[in-house]
Length: 132
Length: 132
DNA sequence: TTGCATCTTCTAAAAAATTAGTTTTGGAAA
DNA sequence: TTTCCAAAACTAATTTTTTAGAAGATGCAA
Image (cartoon, rainbow over all chains, first blue to last red):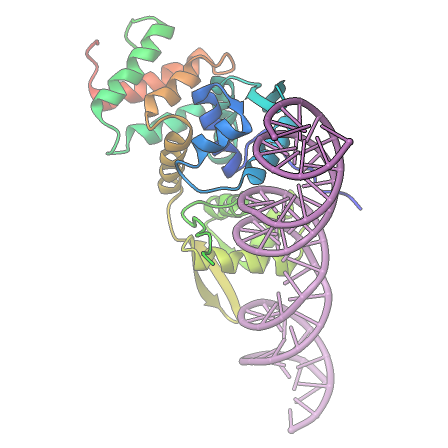
């Protein structure tokens, strides 16, 4: 039987939550990560340990030892993963046209003019400041 | 025991695939949608019917009848869902700052200057064309 | 050297998502 | 009518994700 290949280039919901604190803190032992995570939601030690191991197998984390304890660190920078995610979203929901994605931000009332100005500045920096 | 509330404001992987063809085609009967979907991947009639029913319960589709057959149509425009998704992504991975998301597009080598120009044009249209 | 504390590894249950078989229903054909 | 067919509704199996207990390992203190 043909096993449905799973993706593994993207994090699951829970994995993303883990990864977020690991990017923020730079990582640490299972206990340290657990402590950080449990500010949001109670979880058992072993649950955290299991997910961390899986994430390592998937290539999102590296692991070493500090005394007897495992220490985990991000294997990829957050920016890289942001890029991967945007590429995925772009292809799945925006017809592979990233501009369409910006279009949606532009007509979202909740996005302020200040934010939009900021975006324009970013584009100007990369493109050069001359008008269209 | 406390049941882990599931989201329901976001589509699952498979649901998104369904929704994409329904947005494209405007919808139709189970058979019509099945035919369209199976261009990509073989699926049983009942599988498709089940997912469509679930999506209706979640509020993504409306359903009516054509003769005995159920006819499904999008309950929300694609643009709305794009917006929801971006808001979600922004909060989960970009610290609630949509500009950070654009920053990531800007420094992606695969995104061409033409695309970036297009984005800038969109921003200019909304903001007015004066410099920073 | 033994018993305890601590941490990992093994294992699997529980929940969510995906897929599809079986039964029921309602209308049309014979 | 009765039979037959197509489609929905019901039900359930399978897979993936999430959670966590139990068992095993390792070092340290008495």
